[in-house]
Amino acid sequence: MTYETQPRASHFIDGKYVEDSAGAEIEVIYPATGERIATLHAATPAIIEQAIAAARRAQPAWAAMTGSERGRILRRAADLMRERNHDLSVLETRDTGKPYQETSVADATSGADAMEYFGGLAASLTGEHIQLGENWVYTRREPLGLCVGIGAWNYPTQIACWKAAPALACGNAMIFKPSETTPLCALKVAEILHEAGLPAGLCNVVQGMGEVGHALVTDPRVDKVSLTGSVPTGRKVYAAAAEGIKHVTMELGGKSPLIVFEDADIDNAVSGAILGNFYSSGQVCSNGTRVFVHRDIKEAFLERLCARLDKAVIGDPLDEATSFGPMVSQRQLEIALSYVEKGAGEGARLAYGGARLEREGFYMQPTVFADVTDDMVIAREEIFGPVMAVLDFEDEDEVMARANDTEFGLAAGVFTRDLARAHRVAARFEAGTCYINTYNDAPVEAPFGGMKNSGVGRENSKAAIEHYSQLKSVFVRMDDVEAPF
Ligand code: NDP
Image (cartoon, rainbow, N blue to C red; front, side):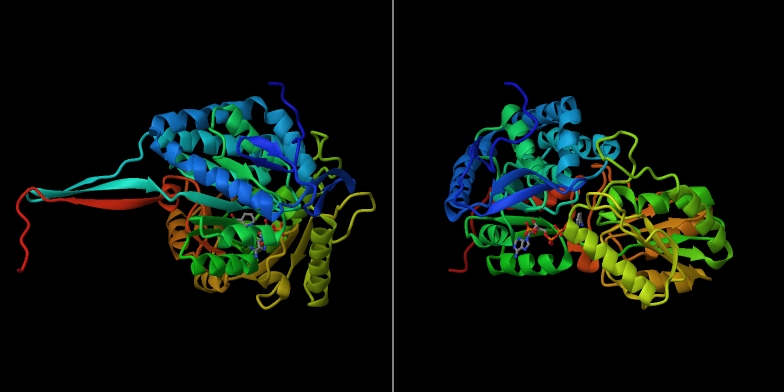
């Protein structure tokens, strides 16, 4: 089979590409130029039906295979993804606008890690034996059945893999709906899984907007929903899933704190703040966008930060030298710029950037506001763009209370050389993923997910297995049954 870079049709169902031009058109726009690179169609009810029927049909035989057999296919898919990293990274860049410098190390590679990790885990999934005197109980770890994944647009390959890999490892079938903004990459993931030997019907991709997601979430034949998206969408999807008492994983938004104490290594803290605010042009859910810097080092921190931002190479994302690309869409650019206006209007000091770039595509400068206060909109709402808010603080108790004073709880970070303080602060953070002297690492071996309104459940690591399988207890009596009459 020859490898083609661009997917061949809108949907991937039952092991093959499927088109239905009766569905509403979805234009795929290359964010670096604004030009249309593909036109897809949203799933019609007939397409949704085809995907659900194929998945339900294929799942029991998949669940009946041994874990090693399932795992081998996932690990083969991981190898194919790594072999094709260049093409997959180019596609990710065209879908999202993120620089190739990033996509070549953070997207298909992260997806391949998930395939490899869960492929490796599949053979070791077991129940347990519980002895009760002469009698006993054993538990069977069983799949949930049909899982639906719904993705955001910032990491289309990674999100598809982070959901499909654990779901398939546990013996489930998957239907994935990408964001309409970035519909291409997940199709390649499904194609590669099937090329690796996945039986037809187990990983399906259907396109569409919220209605298609809603139709999937509310179908009684769907057992689990895993959403990566914003808090408002999470509320709707969680409520719709609750109606059918379905299992859920919700990976939602954040406004995470990053605390830099006066004893921190300032250059490392600046690097952490750059990774936590400007990677993927700031379109990362776990970003540490509220940067609390101790008053004693605030000006030194800002000076070094601005000097480093001067070194950002903004330009064609397919050029390997480019380190800062466009926003994903005109809409997302406008949202981020509207927050720049709000920040200036509320009296924050614009320390860097703030402007749209005079060129084609959806580019803006990396932006830093200093002297931000807790009540400002730019310190409270998720912007999902390259806009950093720097806030001052004086002591640990004060900054902890302020850091945790948010509806979100996705991530949090601390830079300090004082180890006791670092662990004390990590323990006090109300956030699912915390960082000490680093920021935004997301290895597949570690659980990832949010507290508070940032979500429920965890992705990656052994914890994800709990969210894609269920336990059945089987009681076994060896002696006579005693009944009251
Ligand atoms: P949205 O919440 O707008 O959309 C997420 C997905 O849900 C899209 O595929 C969307 O379809 C779909 N959707 C929308 N409405 C419904 C509905 N009623 N029923 C079912 N599905 C629906 O998020 P964005 O795509 O704008 O992504 C940005 C958000 O995602 C940010 O808040 C960010 O923090 C969060 N995010 C969280 C991550 C995490 O792991 N915690 C990681 C990455 C992003 P469509 O858009 O096509 O209409």
